[in-house]
Image 1 (cartoon, rainbow, N blue to C red):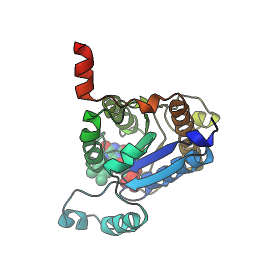
Image 2: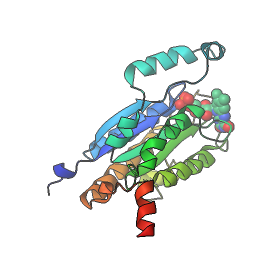
Image 3: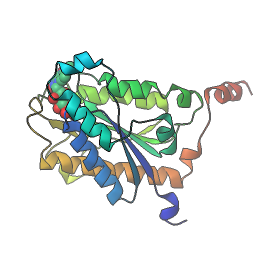
Image 4: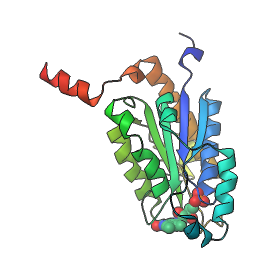
Length: 224
Ligand SMILES: Cc1cc2nc3c(=O)[nH]c(=O)nc-3n(C[C@H](O)[C@H](O)[C@H](O)COP(=O)(O)O)c2cc1C
């Protein structure tokens, strides 16, 4: 089979309020495309009412600008993908509700086993170096495991990892959104995109992503 036959499809589903995580998402996309992947970039939408958004200057404008560029992630996007990469800002040391709401919307696909064997990876940003960046990324490994995704960490498998990022996923420290991701942060994100595409292609070539066993099937198999 040719490389083209196994071209991986990568969904990057992110939330970003002010553009920091968006920049990382674009670098992950760049890396995945450099490895031959077809990429869908999707931005999770706000959950809070307009009056709450209005209290944070610039939130609405930034959201509207990003929403014009990226569709909202859907169930169909997750089913389409061979790899799903989730990204978002740290919120009180944990995942943002906007991104989590998208993950929670995947219950239907989960129950049918339709995400089993796809590659999964995560990235994110925080304001301060020890403000929860790593705990947010590691906590996102929990839903990846439940969804049956094959988790793709970064380790120290590229020289970029010795300058920035985390072994769990690309990251940046924004100093309250004042600092965009550095060149080193973006290099890690590009490496993540390449690595995810590489693993997704290998899983696809091995037929792993053809595993579609759902909950009901597993119960049946156990009884047979
Ligand atoms: C409600 C709220 C909670 C936050 N909690 C944390 C936190 O626990 N630790 C931290 O370092 N930054 C925290 N931040 C800051 C963002 O995670 C950080 O500025 C991030 O880089 C923003 O990325 P974005 O532009 O993609 O939204 C918080 C921001 C908000 C609005």
